[in-house]
Image (cartoon, rainbow, N blue to C red; front, side, top):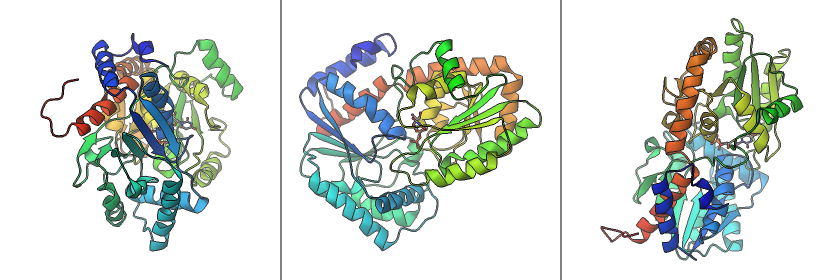
Length: 404
Ligand code: UDP
């Protein structure tokens, strides 16, 4: 992977700026730490960004903390609580969280010029910081966190040099600088590259999903915040008027113990409806997800909380209109009435699905607008530009002008 491969996709000025910044950071050490190599948006981003940084001469490593089952249960609870679910984190739970962070901090070599710690799971590693610039990169929807949980985490976050959030509405009262940087998709990845119609057809055939009727798709981890049950309720309303199929595709992430329970609920609700297809995907089902998105008539992302929602960007890139919850980073991508529709209820979701099913020309127009919106704003090259700018800006905090 090299920057050169993005020459015909990204803005030329953007690539020149990245090259100049990379020259300045040549040979420097960059470390990213998160809690899983597979599943979820953060792993998706790092898989593509880390090799690109290395190809530019920035020595970049991706490290994953090792946790126990009780640790991931606690961190999922912290995650849900920060996303506003009103869950209490007991002292014992915080102790489990601290102990695993401490153990990881002792084993990991985190000496680098710049260290990005992603999300709350490894956030406490900061307590062992020795050198370099440390940035907390928060990917979750922290617009209305449980105050008690945030109060404790915030004490650690304020030891970082800066924090990054994915949307302006996630900004917090912090005594360190905060930046807004949106995630991105890689148009050249297996998940997003162009596919032939034969490749798309082969995937649908392999999954046993006939393409005889309009297809409504949601791709997501089986997580309550992605509201798969709400998606099914909307589908049942639509089905009274339109013959169509629903595909719910998703996997579980190693740092997410809730998946099994939600999947069981989804399966139970779908029983007896042959037009609902539930696919449990193994990790790295990139081509399969790519094909499912390309073959869908409408893509849904009915989240009730969402950091950014990479799946929205992925679907828009494939010129699919997206109907999605008006939460978190989704409204940055779904411009209501232009690239899709923002929805607030099951009935609203059903209404918009029906509207697009009845108006294929509008769906097509929205899909085209969606692709251009993603190309301009949410590609990996723009994301890299923002990370490098932040690094250079933070190292030159005292200068009023920085020459690249
Ligand atoms: N994804 C995947 N397999 C699945 C479900 C999701 O590869 O079974 C990918 C999806 O294509 C997207 C990412 O995981 O790239 C999910 O990111 P998003 O920001 O939408 O949600 P998160 O899971 O991080 O909350």
